[in-house]
Image 1 (cartoon, rainbow, N blue to C red):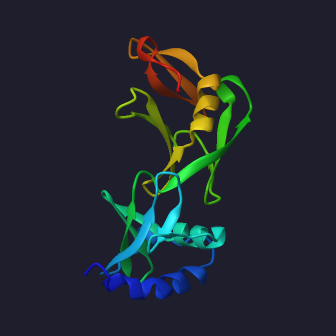
Image 2 (cartoon, rainbow, N blue to C red):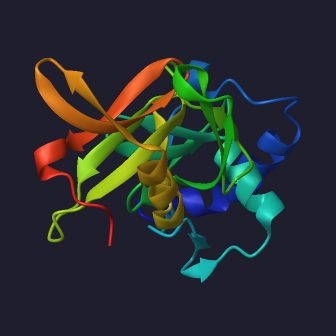
Length: 194
């Protein structure tokens, strides 16, 4: 079954290339066709048959038909669904622009596949403990249960933009965007990224 889906890669691409605008993959529930030897590494590199995909347009095309169901990731068209491997998050947040200031500021991110994301209630940030280091890994919600890991450089920017606030009686360090405070960690436990 592991190689069954590999022959369907051309069909997946053809279907995605013919779509106008972002495809509504969240509405598609095609039959499962097997696994494709495709992997997204923690640094955002997409691999096909263990070879990096060097064409950014091709990566953007694949990203446009990516769907998550539970803990599994699939490339989908209206007629078929093929599983792929995602090591951490499918995307990386690689650029950050700040619009406004104070409580009205909005953090505007760009991902490695060209998605523009305005952080706020519909596109929250979350911060998870990093195993083994005691640090944090920040993530940004992009679309349809797909998240982007925030690069280390942008995490430093978030820390610089951060502030302290009381959240449910606990003094927290976090960042404001789109009128919402996104807590990173309690102030007493917060350590800047290394």
